[in-house]
Length: 340
View: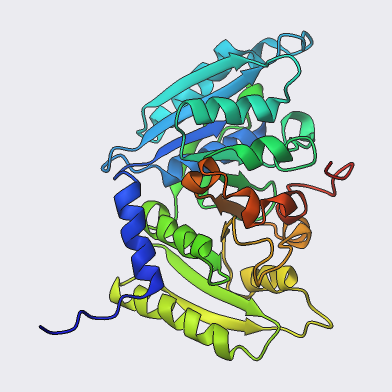
């Protein structure tokens, strides 16, 4: 009997993803009536695939204590605005509005609700109404997001985006919802060769990548890159075999002048990418180290953090480096205080 062909770790993980995850994706977008919510909606809708049976939900956490909000920022208006925006993109969206629970942050209420609804990808803007920081992955909400099961897409207030939005100026403006135009995306996928990174790549390829997109796989290292080249070759071969556009490369940096997070951010600009994608577990004590207060402060592009929800449920997540999440993936400026 002939020997079976060698199967790479990446191919094994792809088989795992196909066995564990369904054919469709449940996407939710958090909104509050800000221009960033419009931007987040545009990105979320551009990732939606009706043919495979994706589900799209618009989530709003209301706060009745904020009596100063004008009428066009009330849930009833926001529902019409964002459901109409989705309809304009030929997407049927469910509206989910819940009152903020006392003693819980808006973000914690949001992620708890997303988990109850089995959301697989939660899209958020990086700051909220009136330019306030939403503290999406900051000190206030690091615990709730760390414990959430779903992957997170953080849409930045700066830089280009994978979802084009024409017209409209935020739900609060009271005008018509903007039209959505999805253009080809250029993904920068940062890998450290871990299982979590392989899983994130397979998730990206299976659910987010479109034939017009491209993926630039980069492994940043402070060594001569010999060992890393073998890992990168796996990605290159996989992309060639599956006819994926893009490239795979090792980026060697001088550890005395450049950190790994800085090298990743440089790669985003170097390859002209729109979106940075990482797998969250494995980014603590692994080769990428503490990735990245620097990434969050320097990168201006949309960032997708792909989690292994099964790993979180099995309580293996905390041992995979998530305790450093506060410093690894933050939105906006430096946190107001340290993590307890």
